[in-house]
Image (tube, rainbow, N blue to C red; front, side, top):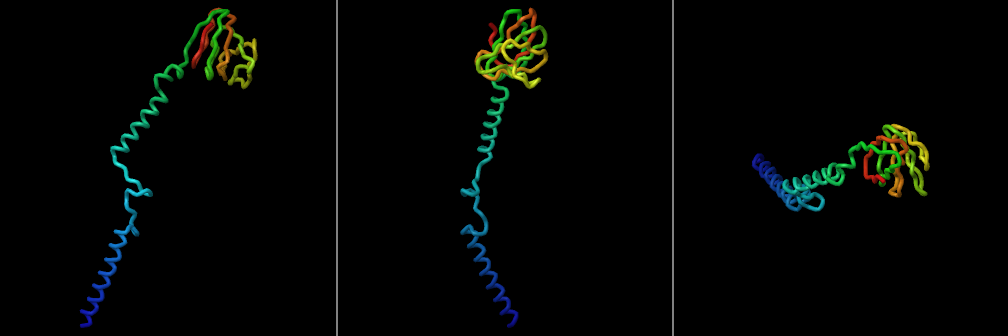
Length: 158
């Protein structure tokens, strides 16, 4: 009889504990239910669609048709008396020949190689990276025939 009583108590305890455990699972007290605000559930197709959108965005920003030429250095040959005017962010590198700075009332041309601001009429040093900071008519005036300049960005030749 003692064994039967212990078995009954053991079975009753198991049933009560099991009932408590199952009721807590159902009422979401022990395990978080997926698909809630704190644990959103997404499908693989949704995730793949979002990844594809991000890939397209990055591709457009890095190699889109609007930017494809602005990332290349272009070699330009200019003659004495010509001017090359850069738009905002345009880069110039004088490779051969001679040129002087054409600035505006707002400032000069950034010579990032030397760390100086070139003013109106100053000689442009060879092989220095120059950056046009604003679209306000700044550029180079060529003073020697057959001058070669590397250009990255938008420009106008006058």
